[in-house]
Image (tube, rainbow, N blue to C red; front, side, top):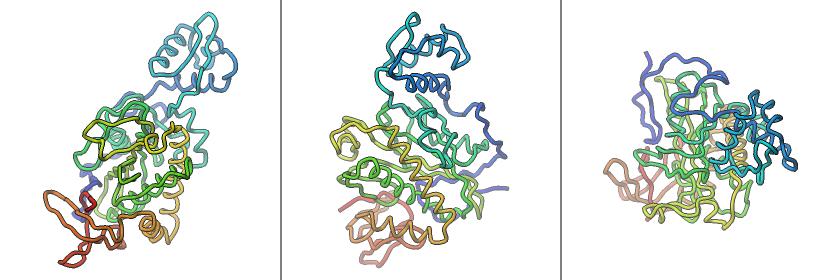
Length: 362
């Protein structure tokens, strides 16, 4: 019988008590919790991108997707409805005016070759939550490295009961399935590693952005959240069955709802320029692959994650904070991370170990 172990854990790590025997998902298996993107749309975009300087006939497209010209017309109309700038009509053929910044498997797979995520990308135009979908798929046997990406979320989730603003094609809404051989008590390190991967990816695309990490799961610019990380897992008493690492990045939002104006920022707002979500997603998945491989293969990986997170965060040491958790609050000055990755805070009562909660600056 599998059960959730009664060990201290960060509140953003959800332990699921019921585990069913899973089966490995095939490429043609229906993915739960949402309607996956018709793969023919990605093939059309790829074909038009490869022949960007010429008009591609409806007949050629129909051959590419093993269909007919009337179906090609219907799919072209669907692409247009999704914001893809396609010119032409059935009599003359079709051509892209601009390469779409859509996170389609046909575009991403060529950019993430050699990673555990290659050829395992599932794309949705609209979904409730990528994390909910990934958790359900993992329970059904989705292999390690499965990636779930959405252009839009209608029920995006942050830590605790918080939602995640998920405007269409403005951010990166990404969840990955991992199956590390580790005890549940070490799962926090995966979240810290994911934060390092996000920071590295942003800096690869634009080295001029000043990125900060806030324990346990926020990536900041100018003390405003540009990325949130939600890690959930299903575990037995002594080992993890699977972990889903959800990453939401604010990329090209021009503004946020009034209630988020003081807390959220996008990369576009921070830099004044449009970002390629495709380039950033590819950099993110490659960085996450690198961090995960080191975490599972190197003996010194845990120490490296703790050291680098502390070095790249202004919040881990010497910051006066207030930590709120389930109605209780602790104030003090941060004194680093312990060997498990939990935050240490010193106040008049001594050094407190923070297992969970919302950290705010004072």
